[in-house]
Length: 163
Image (cartoon, helix red, strand yellow):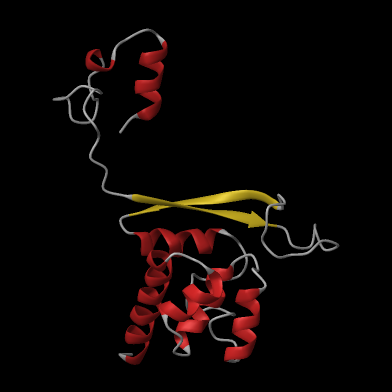
């Protein structure tokens, strides 16, 4: 959906029904676009820049920007966004945190401390058998997001065992 084009036309005084959709050529901008993608945005933190402050997430602004990834599913977009963070992780699964030897207590401590990039620790937690309900109680993160992370872990483990 050509947002910039439609916005420019609206700025020039056109009405939504007067702006033809350049993609479909059949409808005006008055009709809601049918989008087949999802976008994930993740803040970027420069943890060395703020080394004197608490690195836990809270109300204080510590991010230095954000990444935005677009894909056909939440899982695809999330994987792309994690890669774009430039933190040395190939995605939620298969990287340094996921393949670390952290035990349940260490993972729980990392999740309780509200670390940036907490979702990497959530993936590790699912890889050792923790449940969505356990992580929800621990973090307060919505079950939808935790379920998507758990799905990625399950898919990764299934693919890894089929090699």
